[in-house]
Image 1 (cartoon, rainbow, N blue to C red):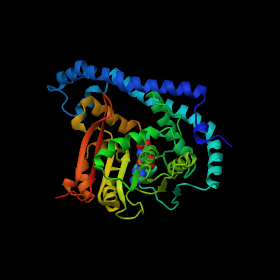
Image 2 (cartoon, rainbow, N blue to C red):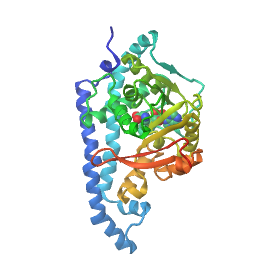
Image 3 (cartoon, rainbow, N blue to C red):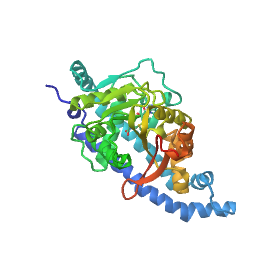
Image 4 (tube, helix red, strand yellow):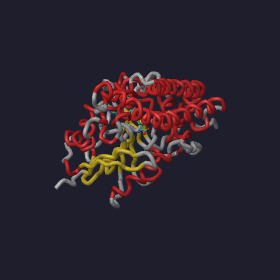
Length: 375
Ligand SMILES: C[S@@+](CC[C@H](N)C(=O)[O-])C[C@H]1O[C@@H](n2cnc3c(N)ncnc32)[C@H](O)[C@@H]1O
C-alpha cells in the first residue's frame, strides 16, 4: 500500500529545519519585538508626538503617525513581511515536493468505498472581494487551481509550521485533531447536556476543527462547508484516510444548500475575520435558518477589537491589513458582532459574545447565539 496522506505530507529534514527557524522567528517578532515596540512607543514615539502636537496620540491614526519613522517599527514591518515570505517559500518547498504523491494517493482513495461524502460545486461563483484576495499573501490564494490539492496543502503546511512552533506533535492521523477536540471541549458545556445530533463547521478549511469535532462527538453527524474546493477535498481525503465519516461540501456559508432546522450545533473557527464583514449578516441568517430549535451557533475568532488592545497593537494590526494579506481583519474587529447577528435575524437576547482565555497570554473572541432563547 502507498504511504498515507500524513506520511507523504511531511517536511524533510532541511524543510523541517527551515520551518522551525521561521516558526521561531515569527515568535520572536510577535512576542519579544512587539513588546519592545510597545516600550519604544511609550518612551520615545508618544512623547515625541506630544512635543510636536501638544497632546499624546489619541487614536490609531495618530499612533501610526507617531510610529511611522521609528526604526524599530520599520524593522518590525520588514521582519514581519520577510518572515511571511520565508514561510511561503519553505512550506512551498514541501508542497512542491509532495503534491504529486498526494494527488496520486487521492486518486487511490477516490476509487475506494467512502465513509463520508464530498460535494463539490464547480458552478459556485466565488464571492468578491474574498474570491480574488490572496489571504495571508498565500501564493495563488485559497481558491487557486480549483480542486487541485496545492492551495489546501499550502494552508495546511502553515498550520503544521505554527503547531510545531508551539510544540504540538503532528504525528497522529490528522495533524489537527487536537484543535477540533479542544474546540469540542470548550463548546460542550455550553450545550447544557444536549447531545448534538448534527454539527456543522462553517469555513472548515482543510478540516482543522471538523476532524477533532467528529472524534469528540463520535455519535454526531458532522458536516463541513467551505468556499474552497481544494480545502474541502483535502479535508475529505484526510478524513477518508483515517476512516472518519465526515460530510464535506463546497459552499458559501451564506448559502449552504443544507436542510433548514437540521443542525443542533454550528461552529466556525477564524472564518469571520477572513470574510468580508458586510457578508457576515447573511452568514448569520443562514446559520439561523439551519439551526434546530434550541440549537446553538458558536464562533471562535481573533480578539482584536480596538477597545481591548493598545494603540500600538491597533497600528500593527492595521499594518497587517494593508501589507500582509489580512484585508478583512479590521473590518471584522471594528464591527459589532451582536449587530451583525441581529442583522442576520437573531434576537438580541439569543446572542452572546465574550472573551475566553486560550492560554496565559491569549484570548479567543467567542460569539454566537442559541436559537429560541429570546424572551
Ligand atoms: C483562516 S481559514 C480557517 C479554516 C479553519 N476553520 C481553521 O480553523 O483552520 C478561513 C476559511 O474560511 C473560508 N471562508 C471564508 N469566507 C467563507 C464563506 N463565505 N463561506 C464559506 N467559507 C468561507 C475560507 O475559504 C477559509 O477556508
